[in-house]
Structures are given as C-alpha cells and as structure tokens.
Image (tube, rainbow, N blue to C red; front, side, top):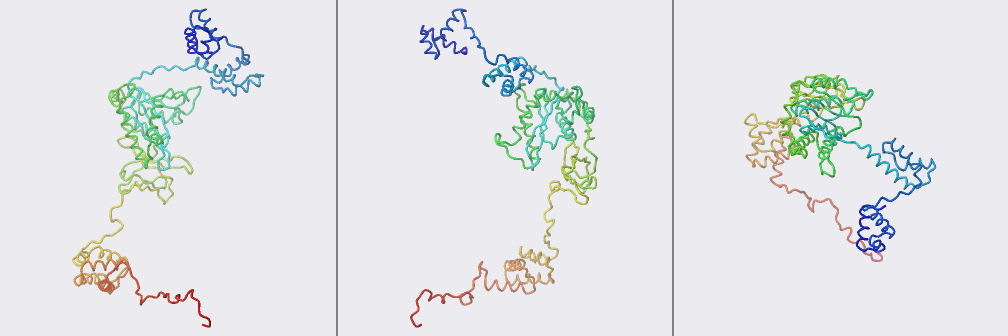
Length: 506
C-alpha cells in the first residue's frame, strides 16, 4: 500500500511523461500500479481509492485477538498472543500477528485515550507534596521533600531522613511557615502515613494525620492510587529537583560532605527556581506568592508536637539529654532548651531521634543509635572546639626569676615542661644556673643547650654545662665521623694479594 506522498509522485510522473512505463521507471514501481492510480483518479476526479485489503490467515482469529487486547487494556504482548493463537490452530507467521496486534492496540488507545482538562487553580486553595530519592550523605540515603503551591507555582524543597509521621509533620510545618500560611487543601499520595487502607474505594485517613490537619485548619486529600498524572505539579517539581540536587554525570554535581551542605544546596535551588520567570505564568513565583499569601490561612503559632515523642530539658552546662537510661548529645547551642525525643525502628535499625521546635518550626537536630547505660552516644559536631591550650599547659612567668629564665627562648620553655614532667629535682636552682650561664655564654647558646637537654632527657645538675662546653669546643656540623686513626673498621691490606699466584715452594 502506497502512502499519499508516493501516490502523488506516481501521478506527477505520469503527468510529466504521459507514458505508463516511463512514469513507472521514474517512480520506481510497476506500470500496472501507475495505471491503477491513474484510472482511479480519472474515475472519481480526485485521490485514488484505497486498495482492497486481501484476506489473511489471521482474519478468523481477529475477534479473539481484539478480546485479548481489550481485556489487557492494550498491554498484551504480541508474542504471547501469537503463542495463544498457535494453540487455537493459527498457522500464520508471527510477523502477521504483530501487525494485527499493533493495529488493534492503536484502535483501542484511540477509543480509550485519557483527555486532560486544564486545571484552573484558585489562590490559596491547593498545595501538593511528594518525595524523591535524594543523594547519599555520609553513607546514608536521604529523601527530598518537595512541596508545590498550585496557583503561584512556588516550590519548597529540603531533605529529610525518612518518611515517618514525625518527619512528614515537621516537613509540612516548615513548609507552611516558609509559605507564610496554610492552604485550604493538601494533596499527596496514598502513603501509610496518610491513608491506612481503602474500603470500597474510599481512603481511610490515618488518625494522627487527621488530628494534624485539624491543628492547622486544612484538609488532606489523596490522589487516585497509581495515578501520578492527578498531581502532575509535584511530579514535575520532583523530577527537576532531583536533576539539580542529586549528583550525576549529567549535571556534574559533587558529592555532599555533610547534611548541612545538602540543606544549603536545597535553599539555593529554591531561591533560583522561585525567582526566575515561570514558563506558564510568565511571572516569578515569589511575586505571585506575595499576592497569594493573603488568601492562605494563618499558621498555628504552636507546632503540632504530639508525634515528636517526649520532652526533655537540655542542661545549661552540657549538651546531653537522658532518655530511657541512655544519654545522647545534641548541638551545644541548644543548652537550656526543650527538645523532643522518640524511638524509630527496631532491632539493629533502632534509632533515637531528637527534634527541636524553633522559630522556623520543628527541626531534627540529632539521630543516634540506642545507647547502653553508662555508654553515652556522642557526636563530635555537637560540641564546640577545645580551647587552645586546654590540654597542654603553657609556661607563664610569675616572678622575676621565672621571667629571666623563660626570656632565654623556646628551648628554655621546652626544658621547663620536659623537666617538670620527668620530676626533676632542684629545678629552680638549675634555672638560676642557666640564667648565670647566659652571662658567660650567649643567651642563644644557652637556649640551644636547654632545648638539646630537653630533647635528650638530660636534666642532671652538670648536664647543661657539659653540653655548653662540648658545643663551644666542637660546634655541631650535622654529622659525626670517626677519624681514620680511631676507626674500628678493618682495612683492605689483607686483600692486596687476592688473585695473585704464589711462587712454587712458598
């Protein structure tokens, strides 16, 4: 069967040559084909009729094939249909089967194609949220929480550790506070944190989620199961967020060294996408949010903290909290604050999660393994750096004698520290002797000798004078070699006759 373009080329070749065979040679077909299309054009005065379809071996089975395509909703594979047809006595080729199945699938899709009606949103009505697989940070996989305000197209993206109820509630609270209000409806998937089960197609809400929705004066709706098209706004936002924030070879992103670095990257991403002109509205989302904010409900001043666990007061002098006979560290700026502690997981995966509620909403501040009594769980990042010299004592002069001794230099300071650590006796007498020696020698020589004595552990009464005398008579050259007269190495005279033949009789 020729296409419309090929038919027009055949007819154009005939009009040019006026000969069936010459037109066939130009069009690359049989002259009988040229004759058929020319006669059809002259007969009806327009495009030729479609050729008559020949009967095929699969014709008696087309009804059954159509039934299988309909029952599978256009998803049945042609090879499986061909195998079934062979069992029914079909003797045709698999190629014929594939063509027939393709035609029937195209017809089924044309009659069952989903038609999308444009969604005309209203300010302050709808917020959608979803999750995406985040990058791996410190060997732990993260999750990207993505919220999308429908009218203004404003996006809120930040990482969370898991999709448990407390984490979701904290993420929604932070989202509401960043938006500056609460929408009338919130749309999401049928996660277990939202929908417990379906009865007769009706989703049964999680009781804690219903209490959370009442606390913020909003209503949570869920989309049809396995139907991402019903919340396409967040689906697209998740795809764009993952393309920018998850390191891949395509975006040339670097791995994140810490969770805080990932949070900063999410903030930068939100600032970038919310301040540029949206391709649909032709306006930046941040400007549209300023118009939409008056239509949002006020955010409850008190966050919903029921799911965050039990409260604990952080002491004012140590960033540690006690929970079920175990101690756990929190960031030191939280000393004196109130935190919430809960347990997540069981067995080897059991974790203790600590949450703090601040001006920006609930934030997870620590996550530890279960601590055994007497063995606290600590994180070095939760404590400030040690003060300089906290573990090492620095010599500080308290009287004139100490001041004169320490004035000799770093060697004197090193000698004082090492000699004190070794329990040297009469240190003050030896320090005074070093000050007197600096008047006979130079202070630099005495300081060098004191440092030398400290390194080699020579703290006896006459060691300093001995080192000074030796240094004065034989200055250090960096290496010591024994002279030829004093060397213990054997000479080479015994090898002088090696290889020489001795005379006979000798």
